[in-house]
Image 1 (tube, rainbow, N blue to C red):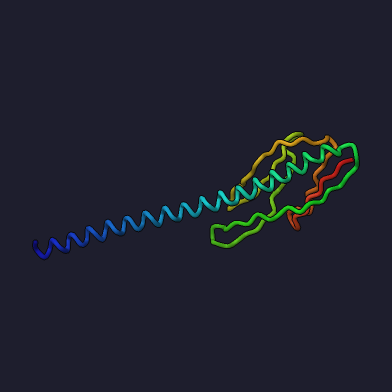
Image 2: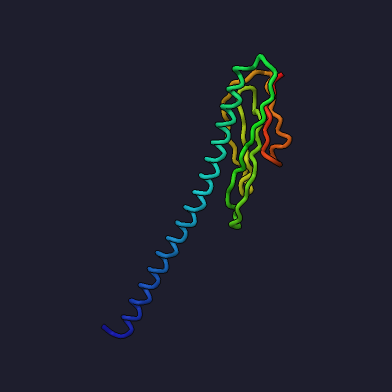
Length: 140
């Protein structure tokens, strides 16, 4: 072996190691981003499912006048810059039998729909939802 060959082998080895380390960094970064998206979507779906169940449960007392006030938790996520953000989702009726829940997540709208059963007189009051998380469900 000559002196120049050892240097060439060392350079090639360093290039391969650098490529492998870079590939792992990209994979870990992508994995972390996907985890954040999944976690936020799960929070959104859980809040939507709980709200849909509550609204469907009001069907049993639809012949009375009622007002139900419930607190909707903030959905917390990390934005592109690494800051922790907490926002309340937007909740409304997409149609007579569908509840829509949406969140603006890193510039994109993330939403889910849930099937519900409700009285035609059931109304959602979401005026203060974006400020303090209060959702009011009324009938009558």
